[in-house]
Amino acid sequence: MTRPFLKMNGLGNDFVVVDARQTPFRPSAAQVKAWGDRASGIGFDQLIAIEGAASGDAFMRVWNSDGGPVETCGNALRCVGWYLDRDAPGNDLHIDTLGGATAAKVLERDAKTGMVSVDMGAPRLAWTQIPLSEEMNTERLELQVGPIDAPLYHTPCAVSMGNPHVVFFVEDVAAVDVERTGSLIENHPLFPEGVNVEFAQVIDRNTIRMRVWERGAGITKACGTGACATLVACARRGLSDRHATVIMDGGPLHILWRQADDHVIMTGPVEVEFEGQLNG
Ligand SMILES: N[C@@H](CCC[C@H](N)C(=O)O)C(=O)O
Image (cartoon, rainbow, N blue to C red; front, top):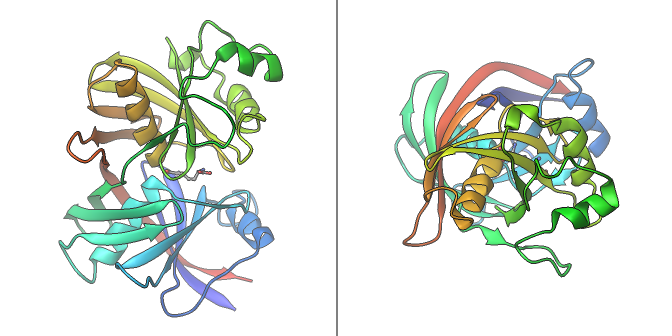
C-alpha cells in the first residue's frame, strides 16, 4: 500500500507529513525507522500524521526518526497549521497532541512557505516522577555520566512543553560537544522517558543562541518545543525577558511567554520541500 505525503520543514527540522483524516495510518516502529533513514529511506527528523479529532480541527501524532512515538513537536505544529489553513485561511486552528492542546494561526502564506504562530499552552517545570526540583545539580549528573566539562555547563533547568526538555546554560555554545553530551544526558537515569537536551548561550535579554540534541533524533537544525523550553528556562532564571529570539543552527524563532495566561507563543517559518509516496 502507498500513502501520499508532503515533505516539510521548520528551520530545517524536517518532517514527512501524512494526512490520515480519511484513512487510518499506524506504521510500525521498524517502518518509521526505515523511512527516516537518510541513506536508504526518505530521511526526516520526525514523521507526522494529521488525524481527525473529536473536538478541534485535528490531532497531530508524532514519531521520532528512531521509530519511537512522542508527545508533540513545535516545528511540526507550524507545518500542520499551514497545511490545515489551506481549507480555512486565516482561522485559528485547534490542533490536539498527546502533549496537550494547541492553537495555530497562519500569519503569512504562499504556495510553498508561510509564517505561523502557535499557542503552545503553559510550560510545566519539574515534570518528572522522581524527586527532582526545577534546579538540577550538575555534579549529580556528572557522577553518573562522567565529566561533562563543568564549569562550562551551569546548573540546568527541566521544562516540559508537553515533551521533556533539560536546558543547560553555557558561556560559549560553539564550544559544546552537542553529540557527546546530548547523548549522555538523553539516556541519563534521571529521565526515565529520555529527554531533549538544549545548550543555551544568552546573548542579551532578548536574544538567545541555542543548539539542541533531540531525544530519538539526535542533532537537529531546530527544535520548536526546545526553543520554547529554552526561553522559559532563561526567563525563570532571570537571564532573559519573557520574549526573545531563539537562534538555532537552522535560524530564529520568536518566543513569547505570556504573563496573562502563562502560555508560550512560538512564531516562525515553514517550508514545503516536495510531495511523495510512502511504500510498505
Ligand atoms: N523537533 C521537535 C520535537 C520532536 C520530538 C522530540 N524529539 C521528543 O522526543 O520529544 C520540535 O520542533 O519541537
